[in-house]
Amino acid sequence: MLTYHTAGESHGPALVILVQGLPAGVPIDLDLINTELRRRQGGYGRGGRQKIEKDMVQFLSGVRRGRTIGAPVAMMMPNKDSRLDDLERTPPVHRPRPGHADLAGSVKWLTTDCRETLERASARETASRVAAGALARCYLRELGMDVLGFVRAIYDAQTDVEVRTDNADEIRRLRDESDVYCPDEAVSEKMRAAIRQAKIDKDTVGGLVEAHVFGCPIGLGSSMDWRDKLDSRIAGAVMGIQAFKAVEIGMGRGCAFKRGSEVHDPIIWEESQRESNTLGFERTRNNAGGLEGGMTNGQPVVVTGTMKPIATLLQGLPSVNLNTKEAEQSQYERSDVCAVSAASVVMENVVAFEIARACREKFGGDSMTEVRQNFEAYMNTARMLPLQPPDQTIA
Ligand code: EPS
Image: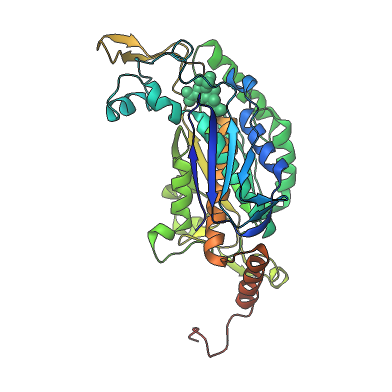
């Protein structure tokens, strides 16, 4: 079972990530991991903290000469802005921010200092999840799968750009040219304008982020138990990202307003695609977002996440001092005006991790060589359907 755990406060000494369950022989693309970490730090609208930190992972275990050895992988990212025990530089927070974990956490842990909650609830923790997800991508790439994430909307600016397998590289290139990570230059400019105006108004803005996973074989996940449904796991992982309020797969909530004949994706046989990940079972559209019955169907997995505007507003919001119960504006902590671009990087990597977890369950194997053999054996057997007896197929 592929799992990961994260530890570390926003202003503590370091972020720590433990990934367990990768096979031996996964080539570690350090450049990929650090590029993703750098991208997460970027994006128009980020605050001052990102000028201080330079997120790069140090491997503490599980890797030898650039490859995993099948042991737990521990990674560390030191925080340059480490000052958790310095009371002057990191004072207590008594005025909870509406929309943040401050109030519920302070009551839960029986304290009036919101800092004890906010240090873990801070977006800094998402750097750990990017590291874990990017590591999982090193494994996924060996099986021909990869993820593309980008920003679909910020506040009132939304692109209608269409992403397909055959234009994914171009979309990635356009995204990388945009400092809001939106592959549409005209809409990127509108997004920047929305962020600039929010900053002037001492306010914040949220948006929509999207991830597409290409190359998934048919049959990752399972319909036999709800815990194993891949869409359920992806939804859980995405909702677990700080400030996310909704997640959709494919057409998502749009299917509530359409008929079945407009929603479901017709199946066609395409002999020329027999060797591909679809095995020849193509679809004329992908409203399902690549998932049916909690399993991949060979089409790209498409996930959209909704990020709310950041809860830390320069103008503050009506709140209550936890010590005095007096009405006061919520406390301002250095923060971002918009972190939707960064969130797109977080989402694409947490989605990648869930796909990798499902692959580990389906293909097993202690080494990458064994994984590849199991993967190929499954694909080749599925290509031979209908199987001849003796087997489990009932004609
Ligand atoms: C955050 C507050 C700010 C943000 C932070 C999220 O941090 P600081 O208090 O150190 O200025 O910049 O985001 C990150 C540090 C990050 O790496 O994404 C918060 O309170 O959630």
